[in-house]
Image (tube, rainbow, N blue to C red; front, side, top):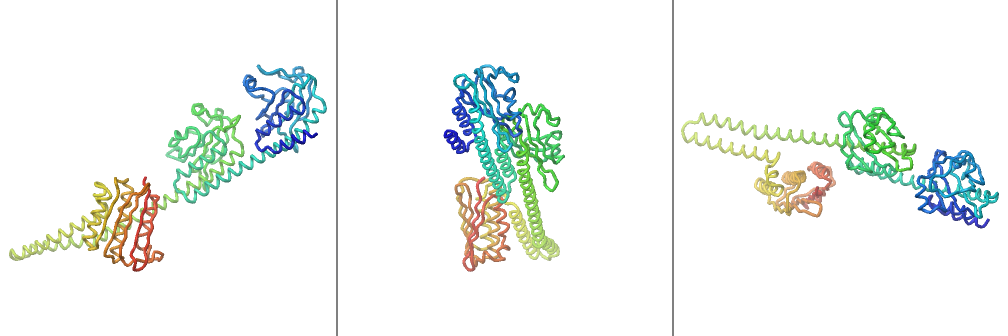
Length: 535
């Protein structure tokens, strides 16, 4: 009795299920004097063995025996009947199916169920009683007590594993939810969903496909050959598209038996089982999550796996919708900005260039009407000056649209021309410094040029400055542009600040993953810093 109590304490102190089962088998053999002991653990269906833990058989013999028992013969009898069974000789029982090759001989046998509150967890088996005799009633009673303790311990261990699994699921769901708040890159969001789901349901591979043309295209993948799958197009005649059309999740226990799965593809991928879960948004199917082959004995996914995949599919649907909204908003902003720029150009062409060309036309008439060489010469000179001025305005307009120096010579050369032209036309002194050892990407150069250009425009319109400083510098991983003026400044927190082009500059910097900082106060000048990461 003391050894039973000690065994119970030892069993209930184990939280690792594998360690618990091994301790249980060893304790059973020790308390009953059996040479061999084993524990068969039933799967959730209660009809098949998912684990078979032994003691008394060395690793070499176990390897020579081969596959684990399938739960037939005497073992099957215990699974079906779930009541104690004692035999004098296993081989003499008509229900026995014999032993596999290389299996050690066994005669005396005792088996009892491991059950709790009507739930069967498995069976304990003992063979080869010390001294060659049969197992006694006392052995059976001991084993039943031990099995009862084991059932409680197994249930506790499974509850602990379930709690750990639920905690991991909750952490992954929270991680995805947090990412939806701060991350707008769809590919990264979908990759996060695929990575976390693949780990939680223990699938060999998980892919997320979105509609593309008449079929679909894989946008994210996790697990085996993930890099090969991303970007792969899925034809219209496929299981994925069928699930997309039906808008219903499906669990496939045999890929080769499913008529909608291409058998050649299934063999190539060595796919045995699968999950197909549509991404649903307001009853619209906008994608499909596919999981392939659970890493388990039979490779089949469970109902719990399916429900979890559906929860992650909801998160992926939100990510796709957010991406659509952001893209739509960005497009609207681009269109609005283009229209505003077109209106500005139209006004300048009408008010300045148009009026100048009209003046040139009138000047040419004056030349025609002029009497005498001196009058004609004066009229021609006036027209020539007007043409020169108009040509300069048109060139400036072209520079505002897109300076050729930016494409031909890079950001530094373009800003040198911009600051020189600004200083010449406004009489505001500009100090320009650049510390860029090499050219940047076209996107970065354009963004930084436009930010400096907009800052200089704001200065001449609002700052009443006498001196401006523009500094470009490269840092590890980023580039900064600092524009300072000694003007009248402004209150950064006021509504007036939004009218100074800061919103547009912030959006331009944000699109590149950078930041814009403004420091200013009345009568203290303004400092603007834009920092963008190198790509």
